Length: 435
Image 1 (cartoon, one colour):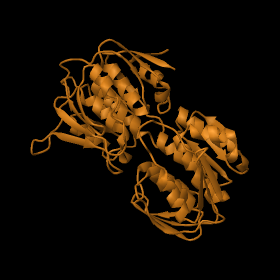
Image 2: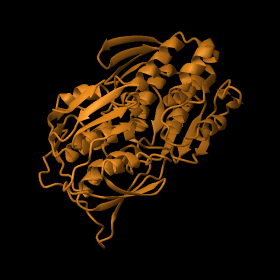
Image 3: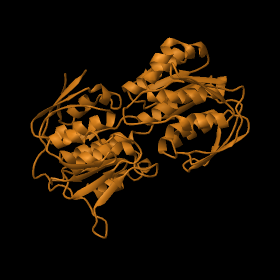
Image 4: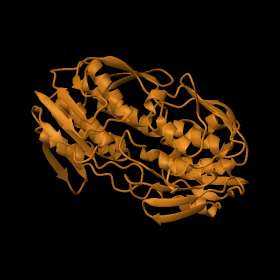
């Protein structure tokens, strides 16, 4: 189990460039299975979860060439479908939540898709019903091996249909779209997710020859085609990492420039941080954050009531940033209610922050009230264990602002979502060591 040693209380300075988006990468990489032609992808993040998926694709028979850091070509012209029934696949697929999105492309192109029950972050239940109900509506037959927790769908040829999703699942929408692009006839998907990363997937598929309309809305229409061709694609910057660096700058009262953030794809993120009192300046496609020498003050609602920050499907605030906002609020002037609506158990890391001296009331598994210190007292260094990717980075930000030297164990969780995070933080002045 890896460990970070963090000497907190230091101001940071300089520029930091966000990695490619993890959540986009997991969709886009699965889409290479939809064609036998070459697909070139750049700005792929060098992180554990993405590298696991690349390895899975290679084991499936995809020809992969690394052209440069973050730049690869993929050619799925000789897929080994027998691998899907192997013990190795059942083991490898189980360790990666994003492996579920292999099923749609495999079903569409080869008439069958299998996957073990995926793992991933321990952040409560994340059901797969939306994925498989969508495949069944497209004409696939579903089977499930309870002993091995192994799912399968099969169809000679998928047929377009109308479906109203029971939840606007990002991965569920991506999987259904990838299945529908090669189906016979027209598929209409209502209550579809419309996150920028899903938009990126749809635009890439259209460049490959798909016929998808309604991109960016919750109503997608997909006219099936016989085959798809190759293309080139560049990942967006990771909005979760961008939000993390905003929170880091605020907590350490540092002057930071976040480079190449793709402002137009950030949605409400800048607005929410501004409501928490953070000054953000747009310079071209960069975010510039000043020192905040006098701290930052949370806005109340116009009637004077306490601000609530809650997650919601896009264009609402992404749930992955609530833990960052919660940590940042511990040093704000004022109070805020954090309401985690979309996932369970994501607020259970607050006990670590309370140990560090934060004033937080955990109301229930989904809500926490934070009373900010206004930098009148620092958080105290402590020893912690990273429970998942996002909470782990939030605790890291807390440690970088705290007085003294903190220890964070189980940093493999952080490595699953953030590329060379310790190296990049040291480049802007952080005192962090990997043990």
